[in-house]
Image 1 (tube, one colour):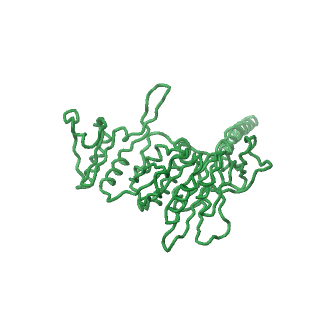
Image 2 (cartoon, one colour):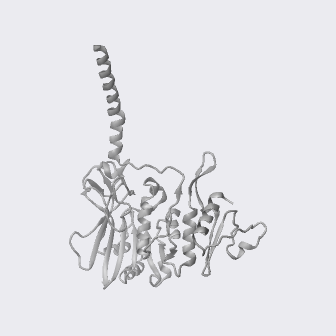
Image 3 (cartoon, one colour):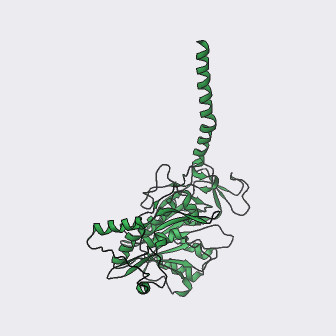
Length: 394
């Protein structure tokens, strides 16, 4: 038995008389796991069980690993014993699980494991569905996710989503620039008074991009969804983003919350030609753009349809999230908690064994270069000259 996991189990048992721990030798009790899973369980795997239900935690989920393909080895990068056990206990004692549907059938991005893992640890039941198989969005849907379709919805499918929103539903949409016309899909967004400005945003303010002007570090505006992210030296990364037009004037029964915005030196490249410069050219638009927004429509008293739209599909991918030490995942987690009516999270983050990446805006990189290459050497030279001159006079 793994010592770290064993100590964790002892801590749980000591903190509640409702928790008991039993160790089973599956080499002797070969049929024990059959009623729980048809998979072969390795040593250290856990089965959390209550009178309502059970959950199997493979030992491979207890630790996070990073693979080194040059040596064909893997290294432990994090311990998730507490997170997995706490989530499983909550799953086993809950009366019901919030349901999220992920729309497929239009070449959508597939949610990476890091983001589906958030749904699982929050005990959100999720399924991938094609709208063609349903007359309407299922009634038990707490939220619907549409992750950057590359082909258009049918008019019938887009109306299913619009009708769901207009009954008080909640939808999360990401977009990306494609050459195809997505008229029906974009009707879902325009029904809430917004439009997509096609192209790719380049931000020419050093503080608002990383390495390349199209890898945006947008300004994070304070809201319930961003309250544990917004702050100095805290970043969201949004590559290859499109702009979202949000009404400037008040719209009856509508409320808009801009979550992510660019600086006023951003340029929307029109997408018709290959990008040769990030500066403004003929046909480009310059200014501050919204790339993440929450729109709420009042349907009736205390009933609101809620639509989140983000202009960058790659925001919610594991590779991009790694650049900002998990902040993109935090944003996603906060949104799904709100849409699923989860008031308090029981999700415990992975205890990292590795040093997280340091995200530095381009302006700070330039500052560090100046200090390291110019200021520090000049200071050393001048100090040496002063000391030399003083000694010479002596």
